[in-house]
Image (cartoon, rainbow, N blue to C red; front, side, top):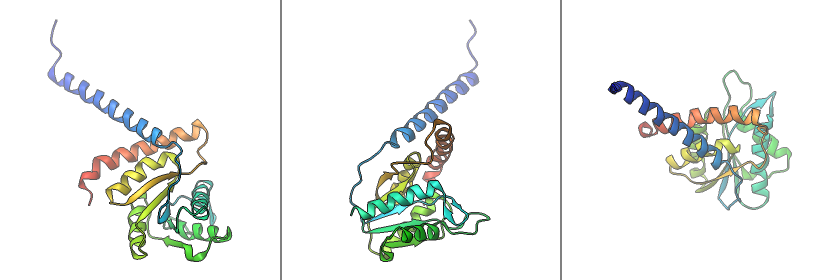
Length: 200
């Protein structure tokens, strides 16, 4: 029997490693999305999401509502809303989030806004810088469950003392909506891990 060419073996091994890596990452993201008991922190950072016609989208509203709940239950002292204006947008995510929270009766003095970010890493980096100005050092990070693994990975890379606070409910409820979100997160998560050594 002829031996398989060395190149074929290398390609096969590389393919298997890639499949296993992707599979493990997908499992990691999915398992990390499980519900968690809230813990005390100085502030909750609510990650931005889409705005529809000047109002929070269902995804963003779910995040805001949970951030408000953590504040009202006494788990945090401050709420930091994040998110700038998306490409071609007219409204700033953080401002829309703040206005919604004020409509729900949240004390204006408990709210901070970060209005420059457009991606998750910027959400967290800029929110962390804002928090330092207000002597806030520990954080609950609120986002959709399948977003939490990447968000916490980024937060730890930034040196933040943070814990995951996935929303108890999500607009991504069915398998048909969860799977596309999972695949998107898988792409961004692996991309972040690969490029992480080159980030400051």
